[in-house]
Amino acid sequence: MDQNYKKKKPNSNKKIFVVIALFVMVFFTIFLAARNKIEMPIANKTTMAVISPFQNFFSWVGSQLSYLKGSITEIQYLQRQNRQLREEVELLRAQNLTASEYASENQRLRALLGYKQVAIQFDLVAAGVIGRESVTWSSVIMINRGTLDGVANNMAVVTEMGLVGHVLEAGPNTSKVQLILDPRSSVGTIVQRADSRVAGIVEGDMNNPTHPRMVNIPKDADVQVDDAVVTSGFGGVYPKGIVVGKIKEIHNDEGGLLKYGVIETSVNFEKLEDVAVIVNSREAPPEPLPPIIQTPGTETDPNETAEQLKQAQENVQQAQENVQQQQQQQLQQAQEQFQQNQDPFQQFQDEQSQENLQQNDFESSEGDAQ
Image (cartoon, rainbow, N blue to C red; front, side, top):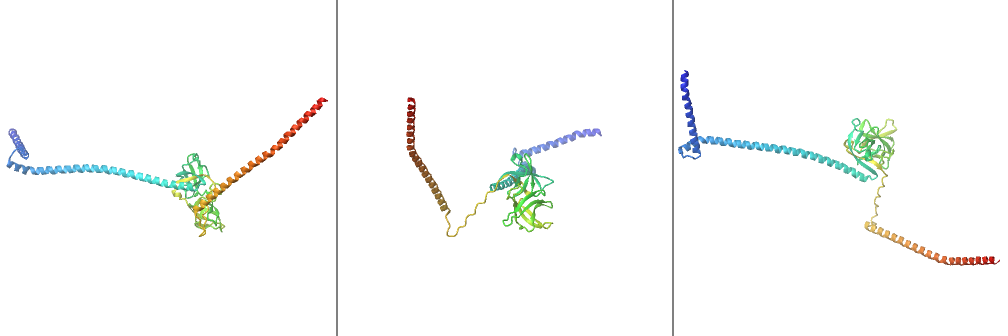
């Protein structure tokens, strides 16, 4: 059986070789016909019929591969572009937040600057709120100004809206500020209304941390809701005239003899970011007089009035110069007259002195003769 297998094995190898050779020849012939290298009409038709499905298949595969490659390239480009756009959006968002913060800070500082220009009786040092004490969140804040900036203990702290508190402890670069909301704080105040002027003390309320109270008000005192309350200047810590707030509610005290008012502060302490320390204060200048209301028919032209005033000033100056010239002339004449009166008197004195000398000489001659 092994011998028969050995005899059949070479024959099978020859058959395989012949099949491969025929396949190669047919494929080569078809390829040359497709390339128009040989002219075989029947072969061309056969070649086209045989090769056309393969061409279509390879063309479709090639187009799909090109489309896939283009899609992958486009997806990669879109991913890069999307990542860049995300980064730009984040950057623009951060810049927008920064610009908004700068705009808000600029607005607050402009408000403080406007207050500084109006309150010319105060020397102010601007400061920023950098922290709050966790235990006394509504009572004490930290600011970024200290003794190196001219800040000292017991200096009043304000905003353009009104009173904030006073410096509790001043360090070299930072300071603690006790707010008027602190129950330990006391501010001498007065009702601003002209026909009231009732004095009292504003202090923090432990039961209502956001609204202090104005206490020690007599029960029959003329105090009304919505009355404005300002500092009275008593005590020497807070200058007079700083706005504290307005009276929101009025209640009778437990004793029955006094009453107190709940104050709605003019400063929003929950949004407190920038303040100003009053390092020096002077008496406020008087308010300018209101313009005089003129009777109809007697109005005067402001330009004409100014021209008349200028002419009157020139006339007064000319009259003063004339008076000075007359005084100088009179003084000069008096000096000349005095000089003229002095000359005969001097001549008389000289003659008298000469006679005295002669008399003395005569007497001394007689004495020698004797």
